[in-house]
Length: 93
Image (cartoon, rainbow, N blue to C red; front, side, top):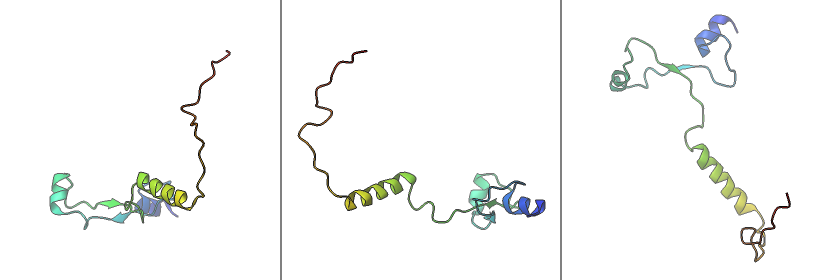
């Protein structure tokens, strides 16, 4: 990739190739949004999109994966004494 291609596609000469190339988002912005953000209508708006992101937050994805993992796990029997209610031993230090 040439320097000019890197600048045009990624906006930097040493792009992070894990991210997709930038796309023109100018048509996505409404004139009202451009005005409120004080973006000159003559300027292009470039950015990158990451597919399949935004449908769930990271917390929601983790909770969902924990639910599916726990529903497929074998139930574990618990004892009548939990660690929180067990007597503690004084430290000998």
